[in-house]
Length: 83
Image (cartoon, rainbow, N blue to C red; front, top):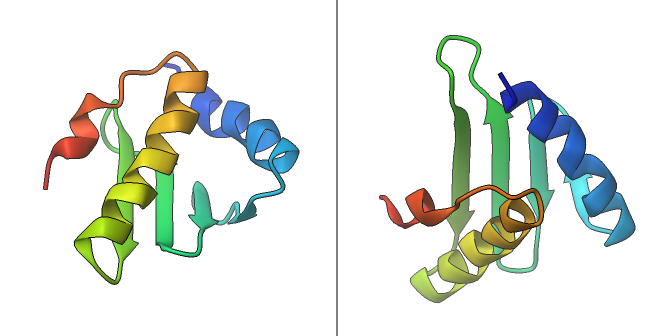
């Protein structure tokens, strides 16, 4: 039930940090290492996260960035270790 609220709750955190982001179809954040997208699924009771970077070290930093924001919202981000 909270999946749509999470997307709204993360925006002020990103604005406060002056992150470069878009709110088209969730929240997509661009970093120097790559990007991450967090969106609420329309068909399942889940949040969908996608991360991309040029290399594995960058990907770990991108996932860490997303994980930090999820933690600020009280969410478990251990699933980010999945492929």
